[in-house]
Amino acid sequence: MSHSVTLRGTGLAFTVEGDESMLSAALAANIHLAHDCKSGTCGTCRFRLIEGSITYHEPPMGLAPEEEAEGYALACQAHPVTDIVAEAEILPAVLSEPARHSAVVRAVEPLSPSVSRLVLELPEGASATVLPGQYVNILLGDDRKRSFSVASAPNGRTVDFHVRRIPGGVFTEGRLHALAPGETLDVELPHGSFYLRKGDFRPLLMMATGTGLAPIKSILESLHDDPDCPPVTLYWGMRNAEDLYLHDEILTWQDRLCEFRYVPVVSRPGAGWSGRTGHVQDAAAEDIEDFSEYAIYLCGSPEMVRAAKGAFVGRGASPNHIYSDSFFFQHNLKGA
Ligand code: FES
Image (cartoon, rainbow, N blue to C red; front, side):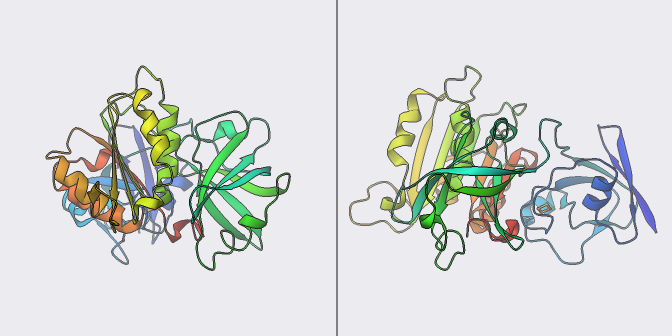
């Protein structure tokens, strides 16, 4: 049994055969629907069902109930049961295909007791293929890889990463601190659909937990001194105040971004903390009555991403203007 999928407003259509997912069928037809994990967790392949019906083998984790109630579904898990008409994001031609390279370690230095800055130098031209917000796979051999978002704006051939030590982590605990400047690492890049949608001119609401700050930092640094920079609000959630490893540097962005507002939020405040406390998405919900005017970028724990999407869509945010990257196991132990 086959069903047609028509992508409204694009002139594109394709056919889904048998038990194929909508995403697989689109990619086979050379239609690059936005996607990342292909496992129903990241939510990047979200589309809006206009006509027809789909089903899932299992309800996908990456779709908040509030999004589903608004008619959204996930293409990597959706199987059409009728011909359908949908609205979906098509990846632009500016995204490069991932390629393997040999990178040279330039530095490993502490940012906090649990987070290190890893600096790699890439071959000529390779770093220019990475859009701010995207990630890189570090290839460890034996088909093992670890994924890290680039934390720096395009800057010659070097790229920075924020690497949090994971107890027992093969790379973060086993190899990172044994790396010496001049050593080489095999890498594959660019990956991911978390990048600045320049055509989305709304004020930016950026939200990160932990090292989810890295891709957001890359995006915001790419907007430094840009006359077209929209107003920017950044919420950054951490467990303790001492974990806010880039706090002082972020304060300096005040002069380089438009109407920049920075709200650090700590979930386990110590005696010396007088700032915001609790969950970062709750702090934003306390501050913002109506989310309908924002382009929202979420990066960090899957719990935060899911809770924020639900809360913000419930307060007027459009799922079409929410972009997210969950730091969990979709990228083969991302960050471990
Ligand atoms: Fe479908 Fe990640 S690509 S949820």
